[in-house]
Image 1 (cartoon, rainbow, N blue to C red):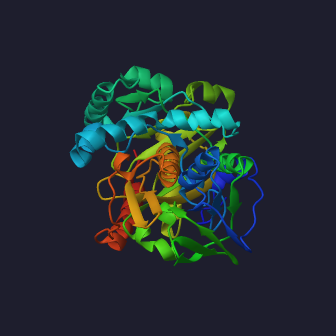
Image 2 (image 1 turned 30 degrees about the horizontal axis):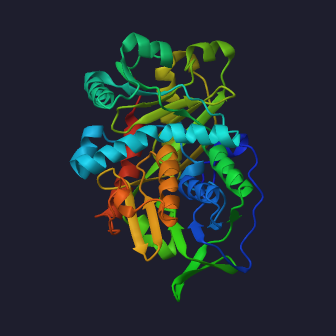
Length: 427
């Protein structure tokens, strides 16, 4: 059982083996270089190859190494903030574009899975945003009303209906979003990579970018022991950005998030707990999430890093909180544990950057990486091929700016989560 920074926990054990890749060891050329083999970069590569564009993907570690291989696996529609808040931040025109694009993003994910035969335990039965208390219920009622004004297939469930879907009496109600679902996140990343390779993309792992040089109108990207010369560079490194594009990391506040997985539940337990396998998250400030996998394990997660004193604090909280949700699971243990980093922007809106001539990036998904990352990866591919203009994007172009007091805020969130979990779920 691992909680170290390089572990993908259960996802590594249960995902199909990824495609065979090697380190870049030669000088080559392409039309587009994609840096980062997570959802955004792999979606960009796959959509580029669908247009017969020559593309090379460079990954410093392995496919899905960052947040793409560590997250809960909820394929949600929209952003973390309510639709009304999107209008406040982006205005009516761009706000409408973004809401509609990300409302349709889960369909893009599940369509790609079906079209390319990606084995990733995909379940499209919706997700449940569960209300803790009356304040939480008011919050999800407002979200439901705002999404329904766009014609979204969302429904506000009462306490009894929520209990039937979750298997717990603890929630006041829930927002059921029928557009959404769950996947095995690392398997989805590996499946995107396999699909891109099958279409003719070239993917090199263990190949961190060390230098980028403008050579008479084309980019020379040095990585591994080789280099790639290309017209365009798509940077898709998000919260795991390093060296060359460290500014992309510095504009994000990294929020640690952990997951712990139980043994497979019995058939009787599965009949009560998440019988329809919706993914769940709640309205608490230090939120928690819950889902099941194909083998019937519960994956229970929350804010925090499984390192130092946090490992034991979060693990003990997980046992207490899970028992409070489901009294029948009094003595259950966690067989797997792992954690990663969520890249948070100041206003909970992702960022589009033109980093240089023909060098573009979208990052900062605020815990909503699967569907938005897939959708924005397609946008980046369309920008690089001229199918889409920057002015037509849902996101405005901006310049990376370091988040104020970033290091202090990151330490505060990690410590604050430990304090909340040390005292949490004790009654």
